[in-house]
Image (cartoon, rainbow, N blue to C red; front, side):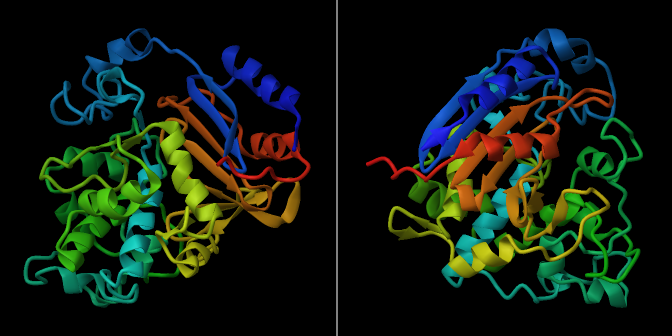
Length: 365
């Protein structure tokens, strides 16, 4: 295997120099081996301390609680340890858990109506479009709700901020009026993944976190995590999971191996293919290929016939898988205010792909 370490070193220098703001980790794995791993110490008490004590839209509920995004006891590391907030990469992991449940026959058809998991006498704004809403629409961000998450998260008009300020996130989301026919347009909506937590429990009788512990984390050897709960106690599937970067990489590597981990089938190969096949086009971004089952799918900048499988989380959580290169990369960061820099995705993906040349090594014994 040939690795152009100079390319990775140049990224490291740029991160160290602050060109991409608050980056906490750069981890590169190829063929099951760690080939580059850099950690960057940040003084988040100094960086965000004043904001943590100031009422603002990113401080929901008690300022000492887990939904104060400036509080360094909770963000970006859980209790100042090494478990990093994944934010919306949690959505992708939730989809993987659903895939594990599908493999075992514990989860219903994706074409099941969402309202079948609710007492419709208590749901607001039901119309024909909401009756046609299915699990598949929730997985692909095409639910059709009246929802605006395109504003900065510091803006109180952002619907996701209003969601997190509420007590019952499931109720808040399912009661939203519909704006368009489900399945017609991608519209980023964190509440739709919250609905999946409710559906999962109603369908399987188990909590998403407990199911993940048994059927995803355990087979992959993941023993440490933290998963936040909404104020009403539901698992926060839209952004509440914390993992160490190497354990997050295991989940991406699981998909590179078609859902099989050291001889144990965790999710089906069909689920991997469906999850990483664009179900809907996403926006005008030149590198965006589309969105699968909570997976962001980008064109490989070095080869337009190839796709990079990615997650994307608030603050700079960027796990990538390059299937043809057997390459997994994880960036963690905490750039949460408008105007802060971040890792430039298209250019960075190109550099990472070009840094790895030659045959893939044999996996470690």
